[in-house]
Image (cartoon, rainbow, N blue to C red):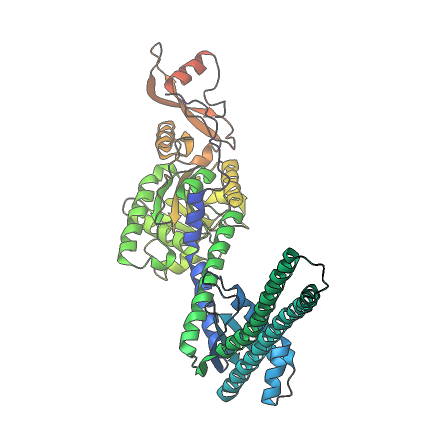
Length: 539
């Protein structure tokens, strides 16, 4: 089976799956901000209690009231209420020396309906609040009536002025009629009849303007009398608990939103892979096991899961394969515990020695004073037994010392701990040192991650390719990979048959830092016929 080169799939600008996973893993952040917002809102309500408040309601009548009015007239009255003239009149009634501008900040108006206005007033005490509400209502009603009366007087005066003009014109027509009725008048009957008709029309109009002026004077006072207080000033009780619930809910909502937004931004900016698919791709190895978060390792279910993962790793490690290292990235305690479990599993069949090369000697602390498997320092030299080294690939690692811990390695990586750049650095350094990665044990994976962490490229780093590698070393009689640090193995074809034989011959080739293309029997046969080395190309 041969592989074909496929162009890499286009990566979306923002992976929603990865983004939602990052937000979910940072639930402590946005839950904490939500709780902090809730507490801050509640504390604000307790630290700044509402001042004593009084409210009153007025009915306000207008000459131009219409059933379909959209509160435009009452909004005008609210604007008039919130003027320094009304505030000054109320302060005068209260005998207060405060300025109208300062008093304006203590009350407000609101149009409830087309003709109902509510006035809300705050004060240092409930008594002052009630007095201020009454003074404001009286001042507004007096001002409203005054404005209505002024408008009525202006309208009536305009009507009377027009009536006086018509009356003077009527007087002139009366004079013409008297002159036309004389004996020596030359005015004919038709003209005289026209004068009589004109006088009747003018008299009717004069009477009409007189009546309209009287109606104007009468109607506006009626509107003014109808404008009055319909609900007297009353104190509004304020509950600190209700206020705390309201402000706390608002603060909690804002805090939760801010936390979610921050978690989303950090998930995009920090670029720390969480999904097993991304971690395996960046490190160039498959995920062979998963462990829960470190604080849950003591649970019975976690012990079973850790034992299963330890057995999986132990089956991949054999005494013939030479020393193997367990390298941690962001979880030294978990790596030390896993290495100890693997060593106990292997100690049933062979002698195992653990090498503690962790920066803080976590393996020694986990093993205790009387460990079941010998634990030595990384500086000691061992000649017998299977060496299982435990080290770190966190920032600050001495890369040149990793090979003495083991010719192969198992990476114990905590999800979301390292950035993509650092994962690339680890994969590149291990490739440069010629240390194949048996597999990755993922710590604290996302419980809802359904991606696949298996790589199907790179036979030399996959467990299926590693089996061939171990068999080749067994056939060639080299139990220590340090004897052939740059040797890889490829099968030779049978003479004239073109089939794989049981004999594997070493091919000395420098390990590149990129992935290898798996070697197939057909490719091996063609390579030997042409006199080329079968693994002299990069995939």
